[in-house]
Length: 256
Image (cartoon, rainbow, N blue to C red):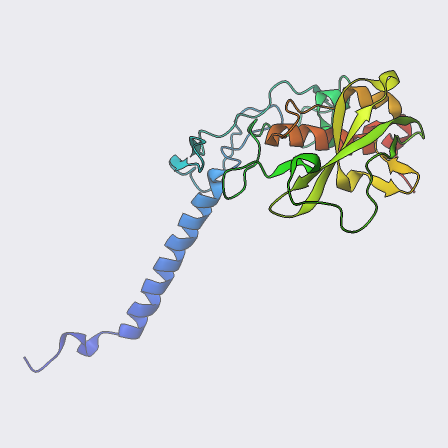
């Protein structure tokens, strides 16, 4: 009774070991939670890779989406990868470049690739579409800079292909996301959107350098005249961006 239990026990050592055990379990937990997107790993053909890494894929977790948009389950319930990609291998080994087998801009491969996002518009905190035409947005007007509406659209080869008719704004962020233009009959029909960062507004017109006049008829269209979905945004942006490489054979070679 004269000796206490902790008389010969090193509490400092116990505290240190408990910390290391907790830290190791925390790393294990965080690493598994980090694997809810992009896992299980796949190879270049879209098949499940043999080597999934040292950590096991976490159990499914279902999230309830806001504004009545249902649920999403990850990792197994993710949007499936695209399987209709028009690319051919250049080597049997993984990691080597793949070459397009058709029109890469239309097929959406390489720099023109897009992800199969949800075919629904992005919403703001109140459940309304974030990106809308300026013509239908109350309380918004061009307060600075050059208003591009009415200016001609000039392609990368110098051809005039249409005219700017509207701007699409991100209401919560109060900034322009897209320019809307009407195509001339010679180059297609209907209206299209172009991301503002891929257009240059000049005093004599709006220049879109990434694609040429012949490519405008195949620019992906948004189904609604008042909103654009996440999937449509991805396809539209990918088409213009892909033209930086695929619009001309001259762009396929290294630039000095």
